[in-house]
Image (cartoon, rainbow, N blue to C red; front, side):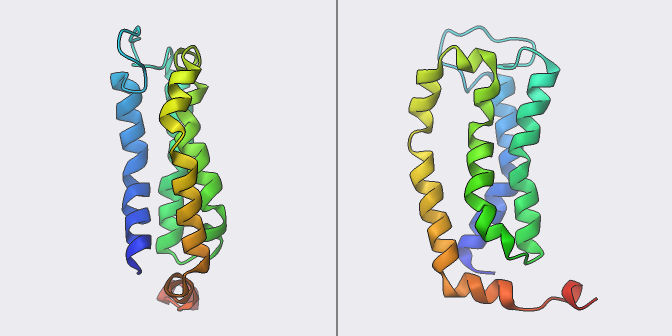
Length: 136
């Protein structure tokens, strides 16, 4: 597995946990904000919605490990959804400019990584090799 895919895999597997901890501790809110029972989330439903969106990166990582080529093409979409998942919280929406200012650097990084994944010959070779699972 190429190094960039290893990094994406590791980050994707721990990202849902990092997001959950950030929401529960209120890290996604500016200083002085009200922290609810579920951190930045006002209800368990909101917390589960954020966790569900951020868990898409975990499933993307599993598909990378299973060598599914379509993961390269949905990478940007999944990471945009995952990184923007805290924006569905009303407590974050009240301070939308604060949240967006933190997220302004994310799209260029995700797009750069995605372009690299699509254009890289080593990544392409990785997805083209057969595994024992493919042969069954």
